[in-house]
Every structure is written in C-alpha cells, then in structure tokens.
Image (cartoon, rainbow, N blue to C red; front, side, top):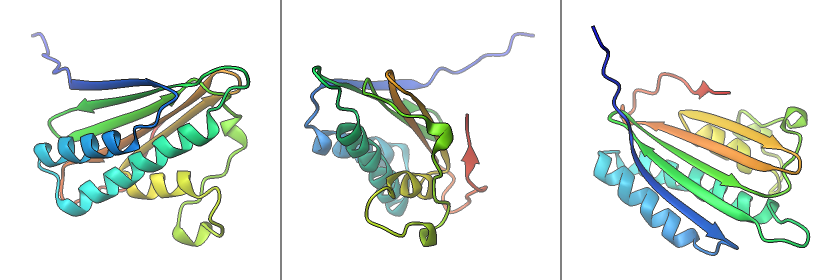
Length: 153
C-alpha cells in the first residue's frame, strides 16, 4: 500500500535590503484568516512573524554587502509554518539562552526570540556565523487546544 503524502501550499518572498514589514504582516494575517485561525491566533502569529522579520533586518547586516531575506509560508491542513531566513552574519545559537516566560524578559533588548517562542506552537532557530539565521514558526489551527509548545531542531 502506497502512502500518499500531501505537499503543503507554498508562498515565498525574497527581498534584498528589505523594507516590506507591512507586506509581510498583511500576508501573514490574510493567509491565517483564510485558513480559519481565530483572531487572537492571527494576532499572535502576526506578532511572532513581525518580530522574526524585524530581527532579521536588524541583525543580518553584512559589512560591505547586502543581506537577503526570505520568507516562506507552508500551508498545511492543520497548521501554518513560517520561515524567516537571512543571509547575514549569523551567530553561535548554542550560546544563546532564550527566555521561556515573560518573567525572563527583563529588558527591552533581546526579548524578541522569547516572544516568538511564547507566541508559537512550535519554534526553531538555526544560525551559523558567517552564513545567516533561520527562524521557523509553527501555529496549529486547533483553536485553544494547544498541546504544549513543540521545540524543533
């Protein structure tokens, strides 16, 4: 018996020197709304994607070159996965401690990854010095039935 795998629908953006936060926010909200997410989930998802996109713009700058930013939406029946990838300087993510609660967010700087993790049902961070950073955000359609956050990677 052959198992049929369903490929997700994909929406993809690629920017050089990106300045399109509003475009990304509008697309995130529109896709989530069309999928049937509740308004509070749409807000959480849009905020998480905004933060990932803003972090990529702020931290991806390459000296003497332009950074590229890619945003990929993978639309499944039961979830939306959004990846924000930059071609910036990257960092050693093994040395990074990401807050798990709001109490861990003491300052206005450095709290973006903690917020993304808290607003997502699944979260993945991969970064390599000199190569770039990828943040993947997963939000499940199951309204108010969060099965606990799934850590990926």
